[in-house]
Length: 141
Length: 152
Image (cartoon, rainbow over all chains, first blue to last red):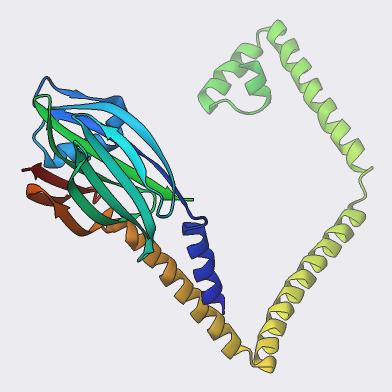
């Protein structure tokens, strides 16, 4: 009985509501003069551990506040759009459907299970002698 | 040095030489006498006031205090014994063991919740699109998931 109560309490704490909040950081990575934006301090070391780029600049930060199955649209540089939609919970994680469009044409689609309160980085599109990275963080409320 | 002489605190050689000096110096003799008088007065006063203290009452108070301390120790021991008897009498071993098991399972469950933190920040279920290539990376330190794709 106690175990069931503990499980319910933890589950309820983890996913108390049906809204997902967070933000999308749009980052420009390049091999220009060494630079790391202060706003990327939490992510910088992780990116530097896998990429050879020397400059990481925060282009913009967009907030997320979505209900399940609601689609959030974020305008990205280079005629691109990011569509993100929370699709519920699976294995204790938030299920997301992410779609990146270029000139209104779907270019990249993925389905991920994001750890609650954590983030994922999607990158690769060319932009201004460098590349774009989209860091998506989310928490279920 | 004279006060040390009065207190018998001087080494024998110094004391002997000072005694020789005292036999010929009235000023020092007076000083020694005045020191000795002070000493005598202090001793007399202590003796006079010590008669005022009731030693018997003090001893009695001490005995009562010691008896009380012994009684407290004995009651603590009897309480402990009582607890053991209570546990034996009620046969609550089973309940206690059940409680311990539940506690351990709950702790293990909570530990599992912590393990989640060491898994990748995101699990990629599917990737699709008009792309030339794709890579899924996970950083070593924070297990941060990165998807890197190349537009075609």
